[in-house]
Amino acid sequence: MMEFEKSMRLQKFLAHSGLCSRRDAESLIEAGEVRVNGRSAPLGTKVDPSKDHVSVNGKRIRPLDENKKRPSLVLALNKPRGVLCSHSDPYHTHTIFDLLPRKYQKEKLICAGRLDKESEGLIILTNDGDLSHRITHPSFGMVKRYQVILNKEFNKDDIPQLLKGVIYEKEHLFANKVLPATSGPDAAKRLEVHLKQGRKREIRRLFEALGYRVHRLKRTQIGRFKLKHIARGDIHVLSQKEIQLLLG
Image 1 (tube, rainbow, N blue to C red):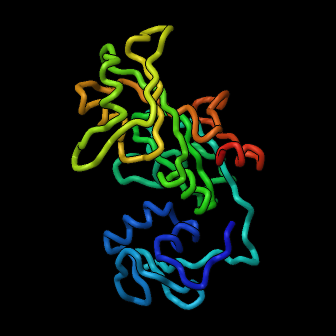
Image 2 (cartoon, rainbow, N blue to C red):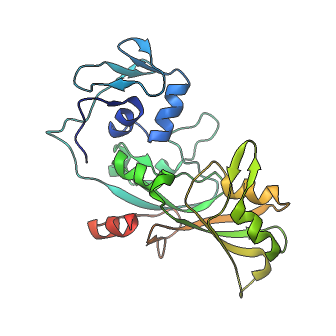
Image 3 (cartoon, rainbow, N blue to C red):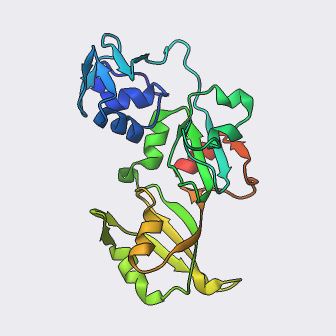
């Protein structure tokens, strides 16, 4: 894991501390829940981890002790439907962290690319903020592959529009690749969709804009790492070789 810089952006510090992902850190800052030296800090604030007092909702956040730092831990989870990608939720009791063996539940793990409650498949959990950022930020071009089943037959004439994208709720949503199924059950309703970005419920909203409803959504691959034979609800600890495969 990377050593702390003398001065870094606040959201980067929070992610490196293992509190949350960089995207979630930005949300906390924008919500006014982060203070630096007792004052509410705007997005983009720079901090010196060795001097500045950073707190979230009144709790001080400290940098990881570089003398006691742990090696990167990367887990692959086959997320079932109906489970939230969250540490806790006031309205639901079942989260992906409840699926982890007890020895991993004490780790400060970040969800590197969430899936919504009704989606399933490959989730990467890690204690390495930099690795999570490489997986989730679109500037790194990390491809995620999804199996999609629609509520009705897919019209192949819609492929150019899916690739060009649509403006939906003021966001530009688009797919990087769309591959209709050619055989098997319900082939006319099944597709493989590739994304490099990861906006909230992007595939569902993209198809909704074109008059479809996503009946089932499963992420099968991130980078060159495939879900393969990980059973639903189970985890797999990635080796260094598999981490390199993941990062491509």
